[in-house]
Image 1 (cartoon, helix red, strand yellow):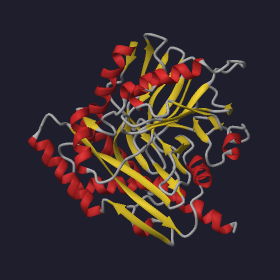
Image 2 (cartoon, rainbow, N blue to C red):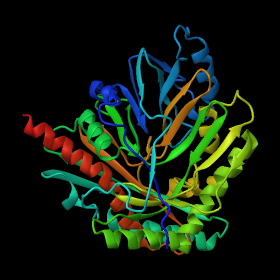
Image 3 (cartoon, one colour):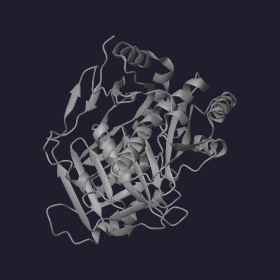
Length: 420
């Protein structure tokens, strides 16, 4: 079987693309993708207190009020929570630095891809930074029980096609987790990801809280008339052994269960985009996308916006929450998530990015991420449950997804300790 893979690559060495990353400080906004990077500092909050679901008009109005004195239109940056009845965390930066060395985007194809020699085994207390206290919510056994419950619900209500369940790991290492160090680890280890850091509402103790991550999934972008989305659904953990890694990729590509899960997501996104686009290209079959820790099924969707007044933020809100992070149908899946999950997702599985006064922008789904504060790092991972899902396999999938942030926290803590 021929493996069709696509991976974004890092910007060339010496391109200057890492300059905003070097200047990042806690409280700033950072976002990078495919050689493009931005760093926003200071600024004015936008749509504060407004439910995220209806924040787009407030954002439009705020951007119109910003004097446009340069070649670049003003931008709003930040994060949208999973529950859009809650307020967004958006601002117009006082200072914004951007670099673009992408050359229009660089892609490399090939089944071998960008392999990183790192362990990708199940995430547990033993995988966390040492010494480190770990609290799993729910526990592994409880997560498998929740998957069983989801399968029972779908059996009783066959109109519920998919349900996404997540779990968390709270890591409390000896020593503070520096979000800037974790961000730099992520940018180095995951050059093809949407790497981000966004300031969040203060923690319970009143201290700063930062959402840090390296998402592989584009929710929506608009550049001029061009619209893009690239949903991921259906996943398998990578292996350090090339033969086993290829076997896992081929098994994922051939998996009927994963193909069904993926099709549910693609169909929902295409249905939501068609009224907003004059044309839409939806590939018939997904391709394989590799990250250092996971294989994913992905379908790059492209279209042309029908009305230029529809912004990148409008598009993202129209799609959110997709079945990739919620389930299908949406209302029923959200109700079951609220009943079964035992924690607050917050900004996990929301989205993070930017939109400018011209309507251009880019928003990535907030996965492979953690909330970092003085109490450590709270990591998140989830998986889609459909008919045929296996609780043990679902637990293993979330464990593999934790590896991205476990490695980042581990290296950030180790670097801080080494420097005293």
